[in-house]
Image 1 (cartoon, chains in turn purple, cyan):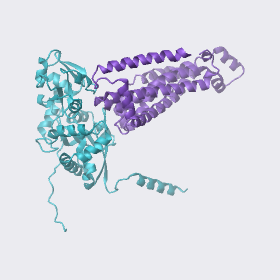
Image 2 (cartoon, each protein chain N blue to C red):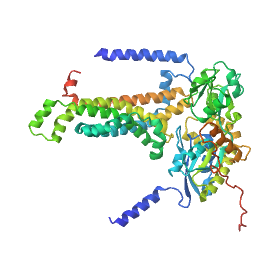
Image 3 (cartoon, rainbow over the protein chains, first blue to last red):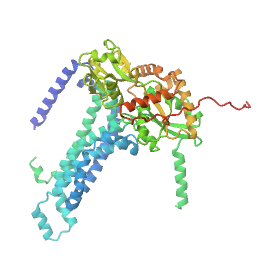
Image 4 (spheres, one colour):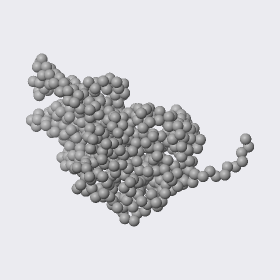
Length: 253
Length: 321
């Protein structure tokens, strides 16, 4: 147990010290060390927290949209081969949409700000959710399914009693990937669709970088990394709460 | 509750929501960048009451890197769009109905910058430098124009510019694109003096911070243009109030930056054709340049893309008091 904490902590310390030493040899407009970033974090703490709230809420809302639509479409694919054949190529296309290319469209439809970031987060986190649901819902043990059918279980019972529980680990794996992506998606949405009213995280990153204020720009990046970590932690908690206690795969972890 | 009461409530709610004077015409003004002194006159127009006196309730919507101001105009989400002359001509060809009625920047604020100590004194000197490399927004009209005009293809390397001057500051031989009021002021704030090489010297000189409207004949347009001209004059005299507001909205700009931008932009705003004025020659030059670059089909003229609003005061009727 102590090694699982000690080793990463040691690596982190070495990286931080190395980073600080390296940054001391470079001009401040090119690189900011951990101490400078820390002081920028504390100097702008209130504003950064506000930015984190704007971008974080957009990421979470986008993730919720992606989760819901991913589950629905994954469920549809699992029940209908025809729907899968007809729609899957287009679902694949969604993950190739560069938000920067459709940004002007998003701004005209949704106006500047929060909604652009939310939709951007939904777009990038949709595909891992769909894949998780799609693969998971097809991963049901055919023998168990046959048994349930033998007992006369209907479609809904099959879904609730067997298919969904069996799919849960895959869905949570998708959620873990999607959570980090949602934060990236929201920040990219900020880049292209925020006019600074309110000042979202991506806006702060861009504006500070343009003003050669590297410490502040890095501070905003650190906050967005913390957001991604928090979202990852949340999905882990949800995973433990729902399937962690009994699922075979997790029992040994 | 009876239906009619619901309707009444809705009307009351709407009335409560619009905080402006109901007699004023509501105008949403979409900027093509973040709040900066480049838009100082518009902010002064609101803060100094110039628009209100003209019967207008102007709301300024800041923009950003991909601000689709002309699309917002087309979609009716804005009544006034800030754009540049070249962008307006290209977008009109794509079906956007917009007409320029005023131009805040009489000379294009675009160009390149080098360090103050650089031997590069003008754009044509760049090829004399060893393995010249220019950080520029690759693919934008200015990039295409410079390379075509000076024959830089294969001689000058273009590398993408991402908006940060860090690389430039660190390398005394660096060359990069510069918006006259932006990058030079950022560099100066980091203690690096620069030389600005305006791209207008090469013949690329579209108007900047152009005021575009969907219908120049709309009743409020003339009042808006008059108030805008008045507000910009007031702003150039006393930029303090508008700059303070801009500093609030854009906290990356401190007093030094605001002052630097305000002074650098002054000669660009007070141009030869009178403040805000536009000429046929300049519009046609811009259209011809875009044609040469293949961004407009050959022979497309600037006619109809712009109109000058008559700013001379009509003789006022005798007043009683």
